[in-house]
Length: 122
Image 1 (cartoon, rainbow, N blue to C red):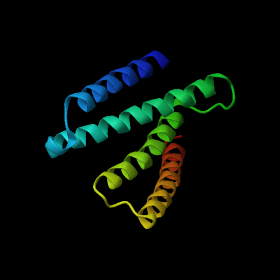
Image 2 (cartoon, rainbow, N blue to C red):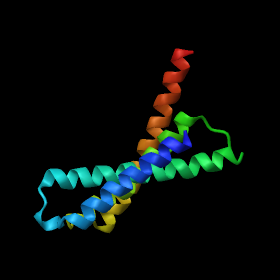
Image 3 (cartoon, one colour):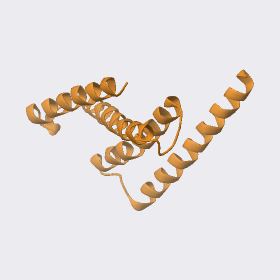
C-alpha cells in the first residue's frame, strides 16, 4: 500500500514540476489552473497519508486505513483552499479564521456521520 501511495506522489510531483516549469500562470486558461490546484490537493493528501501510515506502522496508534485516508484528505483541503484564496487576492484574516473553523467543523461532522453510518450497518 505504501508503494502505491509513494508512486502516486512521485507521478503527481512530476506533473506539477512539468506544469510549473513549462508554463506561465498568467497565460494559462482557467481549466488548467483548476487542474493545478487539484494536483496540489492530491499531492498534499498523499504526502500526509504517507506520513500518517508510517507513524501507524511504527505502532504509535492503531487506526484503520479508511480513517487515515479521511484524516489526510480532510487536512489537505485547508492549505489548498487558503492557497487558492491567496492566489486570487481574497485571503484575509477573517477568511483564514472562518476557513479553519469550517474545516474543523466539517471534519467532526464527517466523523460523526461515518460513525452513525457504521452503527446502522452493524
